[in-house]
Image 1: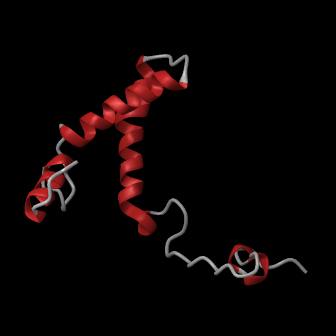
Image 2: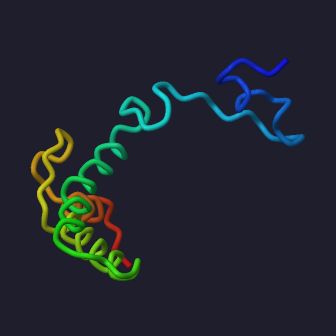
Image 3: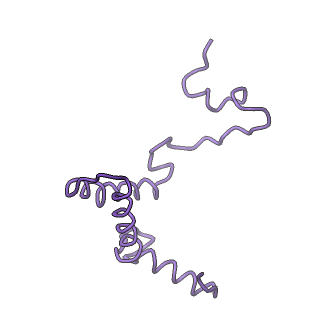
Length: 108
């Protein structure tokens, strides 16, 4: 008899000998309860970069898309203010610089 739906990936008998079972997560895959920061970042990338890029330009290679994505990520991390309650309008680079300054370490 096959295992019940949802139990097979977590059953020890399906793992190679000596491997531990993966921990169960609340919420499930692609659920904000599981990893809200990543889900929000993915949504921002989709809304602010991918939809706009594909409307405005036809990419003939992955390299061209990667070049534009790298440019957007530099903007995202160094120029764009973030509105989350933890960021309070700061840019990610501001948070990194404040941490480096407070820890007394010099960046590489």
